[in-house]
Length: 300
Length: 337
Image 1 (tube, rainbow over the protein chains, first blue to last red):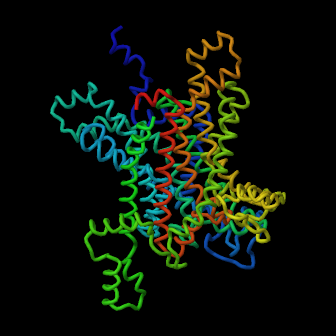
Image 2 (cartoon, one colour; image 1 turned 90 degrees about the horizontal axis):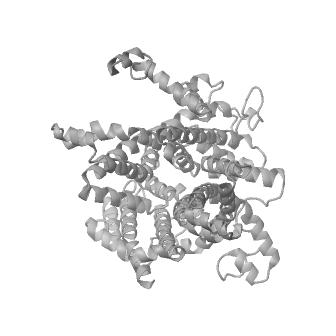
Image 3 (cartoon, rainbow over the protein chains, first blue to last red; image 1 turned 120 degrees about the horizontal axis):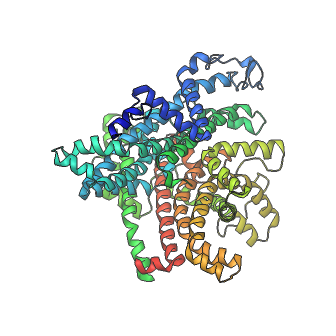
């Protein structure tokens, strides 16, 4: 039997499956390989659904205060209890998911675009591009990262957009270095030389050949930094930067509950804090699982 | 040795220059117009122009940068608007509180994480290994301000073991006479054991919070680094030669595994100095972190910039120490350098 016949005789190899079917099959393989990854993926889907539909599934108005019902313990009516203004914490936690996720995704997407392109260019071109990108990365890494984020938000102005920018900047070196190293390895690879020989421009090779090649590793990095991005943004809003009350956001909700912890009203801070933890945990596990699949040698 | 040390010090100069440039740029992109902010809302355009001239804001950027460097060299970080004090004095006064807390947290983390990582590597797949893995994953997922609050609830409110989370000493105790600025050491020098105990009680929870946070990376790298070394041939030879297991693990394996661990310490310091800000806010710790947070909320930017610069310089210095430590730990690095 010839090779071509062997290919057609096995119609269910992934190569022959197309579009959605292939995607689903690959997804099923990824999840069945490691139950923890499957669990974290389910958690991620749940978080995404809450982020999208949160305001509609919340049982109460997240902003409506009702001082008669202030500081109530968790009950069937108020699953997570109420805060000092009588607002339903369960509803606020649900509604906050969207903002926290948006900040994390926006900052990771921004740093992916900036750091990825800068890193690939540095690894591919070398020379002064490499030196500039390396120097910028080194300078950012010379700061304690959270402190730098504080300084950036203080300087640019106290808004959510600037939290996104600050989080992207402090993650820049991670992305730039990874992309640089991977692009550098592939610089003289056969497929790159072939592309060059057929007359592709440098930037076309970068975007069409090298970028897709290192994309899996970058995706892992995105998932791993997403947890850190959420923690960082929540930390900034915990100290009073970015998000302002009464906007529901996990970090600021923990900050609001902090003054009640010492007098025993634990639920105000604990439920938003747990959500924060769960989200970060989800992304870290997802990142670890993805890395095991993409790059088994780095498994620890 | 001296020559390599000098080389290392010279190598940290570019980072220092970068840090100063970035903090300078951060002062120049302040929201709004600094001069009209200082002049107040009712100021006339002439008054604003005068203040701008007084602050040197009407000059070109290179000139302003030169003046900025001159100020820094003279230790002038500007004045705090809310307290009217020079920022550098306030940071210097509050630095010992932060340093004591950070060092206590780091030492605690090392004391727990190193043995945990070593045992996890020696007994791969045992319960210690699983504990190590859980700690390493949980530690990086826990928001440090949240763990702090949970500790306050459990150990102050529920159990009553810890004192109220209100600073370095409770209101009835007086600080020991200042020698080092570290209350633990100062109270021992003054042989004031009641103050020592009170200080320790106040320090325990925030230090444990910081330790839990910084445990994870140290335990993880210790385990990985020990595993790599334990699989190498000189360990096999040492075992075959019948050396004591403890000698093999401590003198041969750990010594060789130390280099990656020390490298990770640089990253841990970066985390610690950031986490310090959050922990200080939770425990009302009178350090430079809470100073910066208070200033941020009052839109008082000079202390924030002073804080960022001080932390960055401290961090560059810590990284330099780590670099110098390499040569002490591993003589091969000294020869190559």
